[in-house]
Structures are given as structure tokens and as C-alpha cells.
Image (cartoon, rainbow, N blue to C red; front, side):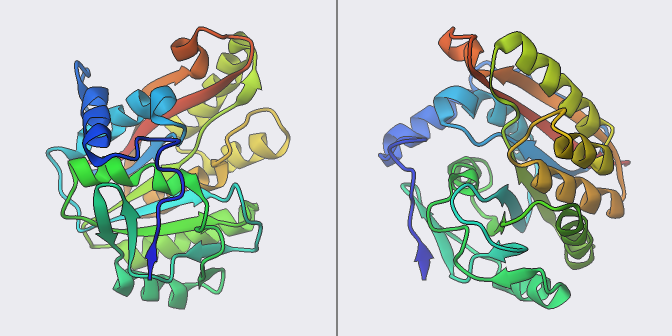
Length: 273
């Protein structure tokens, strides 16, 4: 069973040659950011490439000189609503660039590790938050397998349990964690920047509990706040020493319309050398 692309031709180009060209263009003239040690995890946005592709590229550029056996993708569910976390039960995810195989052994380990994680199709059929990451990975890390996880709920207990399960199952392996999230939605740019700065402050501090508390009371917004919290929690259990914000912007920086914007950021979590 192969998960077919749902947003090709909408969030990114449906033609393989055009898609490759578009991704390569996001890296052009990119100023590299140094991080403090071996890479554990990334935070990346998931909007259409014309809006957030450049911000995502700041994160994925770090993979050009690094290799991972498996990349675990954690995203929110925009379409389906269910309890816990779903991992795709098939063999691969497909994009116009081809098929990327799933790490089925890691999938089995995660499902055994926590009753909150189930191998089901809910959350995967039409979800874009993970799909838009995969063409980038096919360009910068073509030998890696993936494991796509969708959070059907983002309650604190789900986030913390997923973080613990991930840390137990990936410890000692060449695995990268990726949290997929946009930030605030549809505020005037000046207000969005204020909210997003506060969100990025919690991310940079690797304080998942503060992030979840502020999301819960509406002080900040991030549609993938739960995935970010889970990945931060797992990273800390895996020995994370710091987090670097790589890039941030909002849709108004691209379109010029600053009345209703969506915020984006990318970040890298690393352990000490």
C-alpha cells in the first residue's frame, strides 16, 4: 500500500522537473547557519512552497552534509480528528519525485511502545503537513527512509507520551526527528510577529511545557504545536543541548499583504559534541 500525493499541483509543483527546480531555487543564495553540535531534530513549516519553502530550506540545508537512516516526521491533522497518534500502515509515501519507503521496523517498535500510537490510515489520506516535507527530503537526503506520524489530538498527555516513546525507540540510531508546524494564522503582520516571537522563544528555550501552556490559553498559535512539543521532549531525553532558530517570516513578506498573514519558522535542535 502506497500513500498517493494529495496536494501535488497545489502546495508544490506536480511535475517532477518543475518540483526539483523549485526546491533547488529555495536553496539559492541561502546563508548557512551553524549549529552547536550533532543534529537531533528540525522544526519546519508546511505551507505552499511559494510561502514557506525558503524558510524550510534553511532547515533542510543542514542535511546536505549529514546522513540519517530514517527521518521521523511528526505533523498535525488538519482533516481527520481522532485520539492519539497515527502512523501510516503502508509501505511508502509517493510524490512526483518517486516513492520513499517507510521504516516498518521502527513503526512496529513505536506501536508496541505506546497504546496511543496506532498503525492506521486516519490522518494520512489528505494531510499536507507531512507530504510537503518529503520532496525536500528526496532532494537532500535521498537514501533515507521515513516514518510519518500524524497527531489526531494535541493534548499535553499525548504530546509528552509521544516524546517519551520516540526517545525510547530511536535512541542510539541514526534518526532525525522533524516537527511540522506553521505559526499564527490570519492576524495583521505586527500582531503575528509579536505572537510568533513568543512562540519561537519557547522553542529556542526547548520548553515544551511553556509552549503547550501558552497554546492552551491562546497567547500564541501554532497548528503543529503538539508535534513541536513532542519533538522537543524527545530531543531533550536524547541529550539535546540547544536549539537554534534558523529563519522566520510570514506570508506578508512574500505577498505584500500584511493584513492577514500566516507565520513560519524553522529551527534546529542539537546535542553537544
